[in-house]
Image (tube, rainbow, N blue to C red; front, side, top):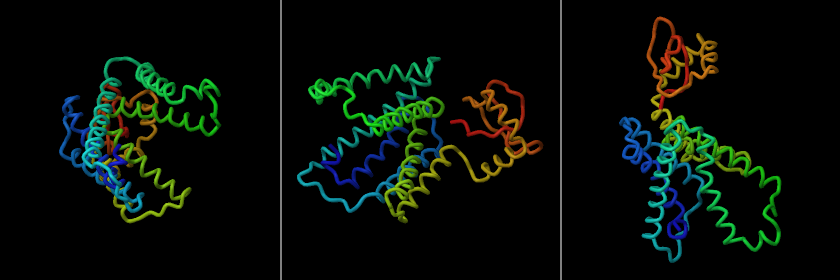
Length: 272
């Protein structure tokens, strides 16, 4: 509905509001507290994504006979539902001790039933005549596999990160996809795209509270005690609840884990 009632550029701008709705719902639904810098990161990521996606559009052609009120209402509703779905998924995946695979099967069952119903309504006669797997070429199977792997990766991001981090990861994926289009589709990188990509990358660092000084300290710590870090990471040291503190005597960065692991110098992504 939005593309038929709004110009493509307006739709791309409005749809990035889903980052804001996700942040607001994270605070209201999940009782999270976001630092002012994280709110700034959300705004920067929204602006960066708008610039990146507008750089991929041609001149917007006004929609003939479209209803802008319907278009705005539809896109704002989509943003709200996207934010709610992300926060609800985070709550479901992080609540209790149910394994990630069982949660995926539980959530995927509803999508399977809805997809099956849609297939019966739209293509029921064709499926009966030609069979369910008619037209499934190797390329189609490859796309299905990629989509399945993408779904599992999103589950991992939400399980060990949060719904907002999923939004930042999606923004980074858009940038990478655009870079690939330079190679395969002769896409021309513009100043608009460079500004947008820089904003998204800066927003990711800002949201994760990663500063240039912290990056250099992490590199120094890894170079001095990299072996200990790898050993502890293999043993399952990357867990939620850890924090960082500075130790100038022994190494640049020391991580204290929630499971009271032996003290040492480790480097890993900051806790979300």
